[in-house]
Amino acid sequence: MLVNSPQTPKPPKMMLSYKRTQFGRTSLWIMVILLTAILGVYFFTQPKPLTVKAHQINRGEIIASVANTRVGTIKACRRAYLAPAAAGQLAELRVKEGERVKQRQLLMEIRNEDLKARVKFEKAQVIAQQANAEQICLLAAGARREAIRLAKLKKHNQIISEDRLDQAETNAKAQQAHCRASRQAITVQQAQLSIAEANLEKTLVKAPFEGVIAEINAELGEFVTPSPPGIPTLPPIDLLDISCLTVSAPIDEVDAAKIRVGMSACVSLDAFAEKRCSGQVSRIAPYVLEREKQARTVEVEVKLTAAKDLAELLPGYSADIEILLERKENVLRIPTEAVMEDHYVWLIDENKQLQRRKFKAGLSNWNFIEAISGLQAGDQIVLSIGLEDLEVGHQVEIE
Image (tube, rainbow, N blue to C red):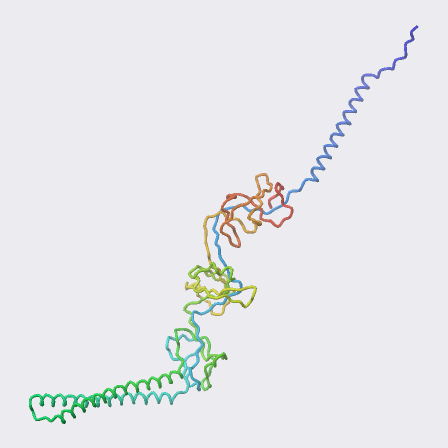
């Protein structure tokens, strides 16, 4: 006889539905928590955008130039330290400081009465010698005519002895020789006069060129002397020609090879705010200064020509020069501060991500570098290249 085993009672359908609902809710919460965790991990582990300064590439002018390594000096075109060629007591001072003088104008004179008297004496000697020579030459001409007359008489069978004719010709030749000697004596006397005038000239100081008296270092009655060789002394008169001014400044030997006479230049002065750009290179020293073994320089002179640039300038002002080597207009230019080694930049693409971009460089200066190829106008590049951890694909925010 078969015995039926007791059957497990089935749960009600409502209870099963409830359990399924509970399980589904639990799974949903678990998925939400997992998704939140994943997003959190992604958010906190991904690199944060860097804030950078950006620059939009455009076109403009680039000027390549070189400047002096140490401060330069404004100098007058010509400057003369004047002193008498002979020592003596200052008798006359005919100018004062700041006065404009003309070329060959007498500026000062030392005591020279004896030399002036000597000049007068030699002039009188020349006049006397000229009169004496005139008398002798007239007698010589008469003797010559007498000799010719006697020779004609003898030729026409007149009774003229040979002895008398010979004496007349000899006397004529002697008188002519005496005439030549007296004329030569005039030349000698004139040379004596020139020597006396030269000695007198040593006591006079005249302006060698038109200019301005910058300084006077002598007083009437003082004893003045020229500077002995190798021993510089204060000159009695300092004369400046300020009709034009130059700036003399040292240029590094590496840059000096690029400079040519006639190149345009600008001059900057501490005493004035504006630049003065009418300058031209007028001289390049033919040697290198080696005062400092590690910083050898070449002295370069720039001459200012425009009247407005010469206004208010004084010799002795400190000044800097900037010499124009080359100029290009309307070229694609990049700020020098944005360029890394080997001529590449950090380019910001349309997704605000960094791309490393190399370009071909052309003309450059302290501010800009010409981009011949590799970049185009409108590109945005990073200026703040000093930031660390710049990588390709890095997200950035523009400041």
